[in-house]
Length: 322
Image 1: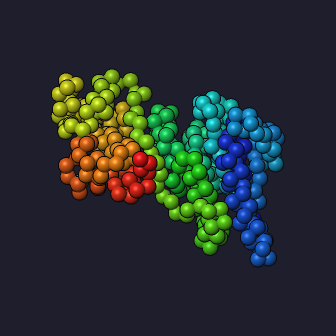
Image 2: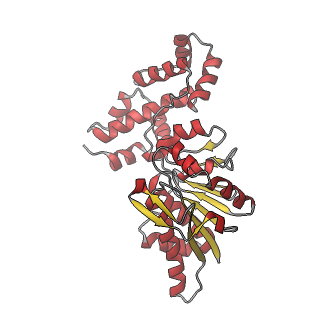
Image 3: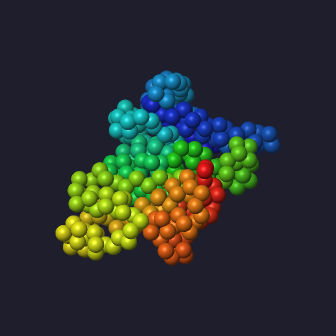
């Protein structure tokens, strides 16, 4: 039997504690209906036996505290809420426990903003990680040694798993069910809980917010220029000239400050403007494309799909509300 420890951090979001418990318990129920012994022993593990969740609206009753658990097979870290630095500080007693269990062979899965608590252990340094797309800039600022992959729903990195934003944690739990219990049970659980299985990207949900908390004022000026003039043709040389910087120096500083190259940043700003056009206007694809400064429909479609995971037509049909 695989021992699964669902952590109960102070201030955690209730759904990301209860959701995994329900899904994993369903596996046991399905096996039991076939006369097969349960596969998972699922327990809630807290710093104390009772823990306030979701800003104090709920209280979780843990099966054990961390000092009572010396060995476990999988640790699930739910999403934490509120001010993330404060949340990490309130839950810092988990950090050495998580680290020690991992060294002893435990696997770890973080759900959504649980990645911030996992990242605080140092176990993700030099590794890939997913988290909620809206917290990309804050995560990069706090944990520069981690390779954040903001478009991914699931990352599997050397027995450490992480999921994208909000309810995409359900896809990670299904992924783990398939790994431990097989494809058939994972599909059955996806049907019972009406979860779309094998959803790999959260790019379509991403609202691009350029990272400006970096202190490099000339680069911030370049970002603001791009965001105010995205419908015009902007070149790297033009920006370097405006800032009185050498091209290579500006490109190096821009990448360091924003985690994007200049060209990537321009493309992401244009695509974000395009998405808003598709959502709010009655204009056709070509008209919106021209509004943001694209004239080559093939190039536009390629860039748009690479960034959002959807074609322009698919995005407009899915998200237009006008």
